[in-house]
Length: 164
Image (cartoon, rainbow, N blue to C red; front, side):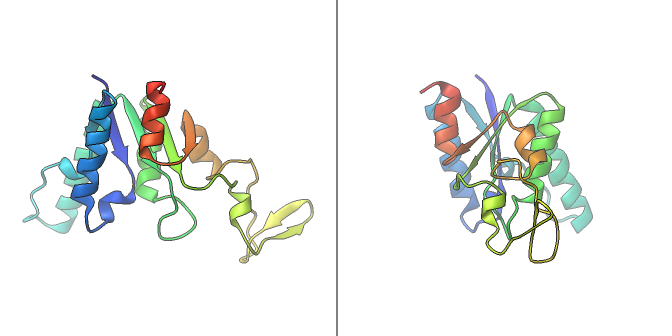
């Protein structure tokens, strides 16, 4: 049975354990085994740096053990995907894993900027920074590290990779 590492900022939600259980159940329903970061056992009586290091190592090991990574690439605390999730996707890609993302919007990254200005054939944001325009819903580095980014949710990706 193929293993799927479930990446995303869902681990920061109040009901993250329940979310993980639901996502793992969906994996099982489609014939996969789900690996959720909150399933790791970490000793929280240690120093904060040691706890952080243990979480990092445990999650990296889960990614190594996985065949596939499915990442929630929806905006988190701003316009961009969660930085930890982006790292997990890049790491999985570097390991040769199949990486899939999902996002609620079908609009391009460029279209997500409301107050952009055109100048010299390029677009600039409110802070006068260049906005990339490659017709992806996220930054090109994360978009190109994924086999595919699905407009929808976690189950939509499972359906896609299951051929349903």
